[in-house]
Image 1 (tube, helix red, strand yellow):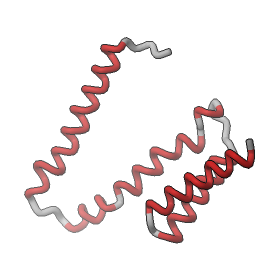
Image 2 (tube, one colour):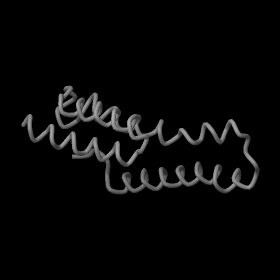
Image 3 (tube, one colour):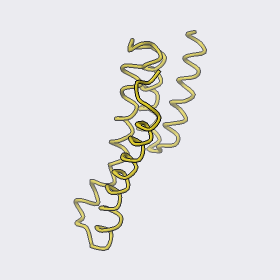
Length: 110
């Protein structure tokens, strides 16, 4: 059970929503009207590539499903996802390969 009350959870969601909107508005609402330098546009293209591993790495290295113990199925899925992404240069194919490898690995190992 959570130690937060329902009102606190909704307050956290509202604050995170306002923060997310403000952060996006700075780029999309204010900066989009001005021409951006080429170096900044090049770095912004890599943002999704940097965010996705940051979201997935804790799920692979410290999975909550195993109480933080490293699991071979998740490590294999991460490696196959990386290999599929490098080989295909397509995020969707990498994600689908990772899903297939994870569920096949969990099915075979457990």
